[in-house]
Every structure is written in structure tokens, then in C-alpha cells.
Image (cartoon, rainbow, N blue to C red; front, side, top):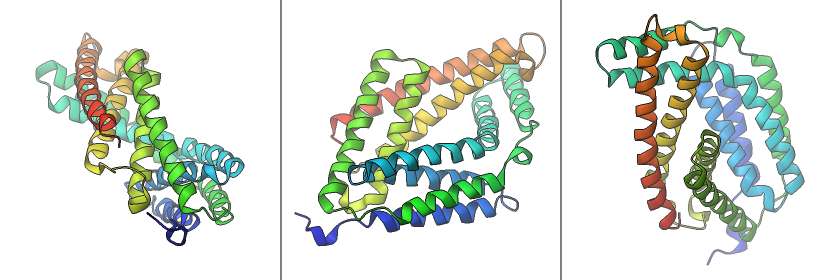
Length: 265
């Protein structure tokens, strides 16, 4: 049984993630992948803040709202890049005219304004605000950390059940976010996580749900702007390939989700 003296240092962990996010943001101009790493650090910090809600509910709400604003600020540039990459990957499984349509779609997305639209200074201000909030977080006891972790587990399990019952894009996306949150929290808390971590299964599930989400967003892009995939029936071919990919990924995610939550992760 863990003693109170060995409680997870939530304040330090939050601060470390946000400092790392600021470092990656500053590297965006020289390293295109730095923006992705910045977003990951912010998501990890949000997961920690969710754990810390037990000892600071008001502060957690303010933190989450501020982090959501930061993610919106840096989100578009990264999303467009990720969708182009996803279109290339799905196209790699296709042949002939379908592969060509998906390649055209990917190239069209790559040509969209991305990094140029990124408000780096606005994002930096938001990250510094988050760091200031992290540094005044009250110390959390081992029991509070345990309760916070259990709350995240319940949220992920509830989101999984809703996604199975409803199966619409919004519910699937909500499940994905909860699984990412569970994965980040379990990884960061390490020995303080109150259940089997099942890290590899969690990573694989988050990957599958992320790829499913990308396919959904690509379908929306094609529906809104069919010309992105090319002329003639190119948009129809691309849409069919994307729907097939989404269904395949959803089946695999559902099966893995059942295993993960049955195991009490």
C-alpha cells in the first residue's frame, strides 16, 4: 500500500509538460514535427490536470478551458498536415484510379496554408498562462491521485460504452479523446496509476481511433470540396476507399476496446 509520502508530484509533472510544450513551439520554424510534439505535451498536461481535478476542481476547469484555447490556436496547421499524411497512407492500400484520387486529395491538402497561419505568439502566451496555473496547483495526496486516476478510467469506459451504443462520429471522437487521456495519465503516473496500465494496448487503441478519426475528417473534406480528389468520379472513388478504411479501423478499435476495458485498464 502506497504511503502519503510517496505521492505523485502533480505540480512538477504539469510544469515539466508545459515547459516542454513551449520549447517545442519555439522550434516550429526549424522543425515541422515540433508542432506535433507541442500538441502532445499539451494533451499530456490536460490529462494530468484531469487527475488533479480531485484536489483543485476550479483550477482544473480553468486549466482545461485555457488548454482548449491553445489547442484551437495551433490545431489547424497540424490537422491539415495529419490529414494529408492519412490520405497518403490510405491511398497506399488502394490501386489504380482510387489510389490516384487519394494521392490528389493528399496533395491538395498539402497545398493548403498551414504553418503560415499559425499564431505562434498567441500560442506561447496561452502556454505561459497554463504554466502559471500549473505552478500554483495544490499538492495532491496519494489518495487524491488514486481517485483522479480512477475517475479517468471511468470516463474512458463510459465513453467506450456510449460509442458502441451510438456509433456516430461525435461519440467515436469523444471515446478517442478519453482513451488518449487514459493512456497519457497511465503513462505519466506510472506506479501511481490505480489499475493495470496496459500501455501497449492503450497505444494501439489510440492509434486505431486516431486513424478512424482521420478517415472521417477526410470524408468530410471530400464531401465539402469534391474537387480536392480530382475530376470526374475521383471524389466518389476516394470516398468509398475512405468509408471502407473507416469501417475496418472501427471494427479493430471496437475489438481492442472490449479487451482493454474488460481487463480493467
